[in-house]
Image (cartoon, rainbow, N blue to C red; front, side):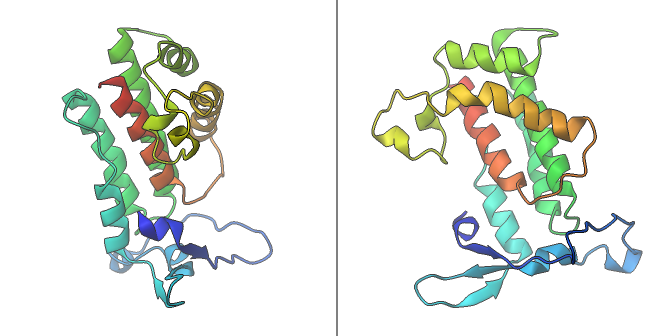
Length: 196
């Protein structure tokens, strides 16, 4: 995921307007969504720039996986979210669908782990954090956990934030950003900690 650290956005849709999604023409199905062509990767050592590629997307998603102890049905559903993330190359709006699938898979994993039926995502997240299963050190994006391996400063915020993000996606929104890779990683790190 090194390219994610070095990405620069050169994205301009005009005067703050958003594009209306349209059905891609059949002859354009295998072409990248033009919104992806506005991103470049800069090598900070050499200053060299290059465009993103489908290979960048694939290699990134390939690194975001659930370990073997996670139940097969959870891993299967998470792979749907991973595939959707790769297909954002062709359809930028799939970012949010990939994220929503990742959140629903996280909720599925929590229900399995705690053998809970109709309990909301927020309550399940609170139970996971309060049980001590989830620690800051289990998240690749949290750097301060090296100083204190038992820190839960980051994870204490997740029961409030994750349901809010999931609900915004699930209940209709025009939100559109390229956050599928980051959210896949967070959901994978959370699920992997549940089944250590």
